[in-house]
Amino acid sequence: MDATQLLKGVLDVAVLAVLKTGDGYGYDVLRRLRSAGLEDVGDASVYGTLRRLYAGGALTTYVVPSDEGPHRKYYALNKTGHDQLAQSAKIWRSFASTMDDLLTEQGVAA
Amino acid sequence: MSTDASVGGNSRTTVAARSDVASAPGGTRTAEIAAYLADVRAVMTDLDPGVRDGLLDDLPEHLAEVAAADTAPLQSRLGSPAAFAAELRSAAGLAPAPPSVARRPNEQPVSPAQLAREFAVGLDRSLGRLAGYDTLRELLVALRPGWWVLRGAGVASFLAIATRYASYYMNFADVIVMSLVAFIGALISVRLGRATMRANASTRTLVAIINVPCVLVLLYAALTIQRY
Image (cartoon, rainbow over the protein chains, first blue to last red):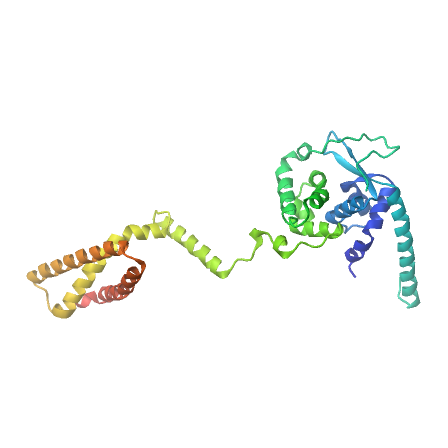
C-alpha cells in the first residue's frame, strides 16, 4: 500500500493539527509535517490543502514582513478550523481504531 | 469566509503589502521562479481567473522559500510544473485539467511528417553550410545555369555520337562538328531552362519529367565514355 494515497485523505487533519500548535506559513507547515514523520508529503499537496482550507473558511491569514527573506503569509486556525479539527480528529481516531481492531482480530501482525 | 486579519494575541505585525519574490536571498533565482510559476499557471488556464489567482496567491513566496532553502533547481525538488500543478489541483479539491490544457503546445507529440520536415530542413542547412551557402537549396539554385549547360551539351553530344559516331574514331572535323553540336545543345537547354522558370506549374512538372531521361543519359555517357 502506498502511504501517499492514504495521506491524501488525512492531509487536512494533519495540516489543521500542525497549525493548532502554532501559526505557520506554507513552507513552515510543510517542514513541520515532514519532521513529524510525514516525509513523503509534497509541496504542492500541502500548499493546495492550505489554500483549500483557507477558501473553505477554516483558516485566516496574515502577512509578516521579513528582512532577510520573502514576506511570509501565515495561516492560523479560526473557530471553524478548530471545530473542523476536533471533528476530523474524532473521525480519524474512530477509523484508525476500527482498522486496528480488524487487523488484530484477523491475526495480522502489527 | 475568512479574511486576511491579525490573529488576537499574536505579536506579529500585519501588513497589507504583497510579498516580493525579488527580495528573496536567492534573488538571482527570480527568473527560475518566475518561469516555474508561469508554467504552473499555463496549465491552469481552464480555471476561473478568481479561483486560479486565489490558488496561486502565495505560491511565489513558497517557491522563494524552497529556492532559498535548497540550491538545487526547483524542478528537482518539486517535479515538473505540470506535475506540481496537477498535485496542487488535486489537493485543492479541483478537477484535473482537461487534456487540451494539461498538454502544453511545446509538449504536443510530433507527427512523423513534422519530424521528416524538420530533418529535411536541418539537412538542407548543414549541407549548404558545408559548401559555404546558407542552405543546400541556395547552392542548387546558383548551380542551375550550370546544369542547363551540362544537360544540353551532354545530351546533344551523346545523341550525335550514338547515332553517327559510335565506335568511330573522331577526326579534327568531327571534333569541330561535335563541339558545335554541344554548343547548340547547351544554348537550347539554357533557353528551355530560362523559359521553364517563368512557366506554370504543370509545364515545370513536364520539364522535371523530361530531366529524368536526361540525367540517365548523362550517367550512362559518363560511365561508358572510355568506349568512345
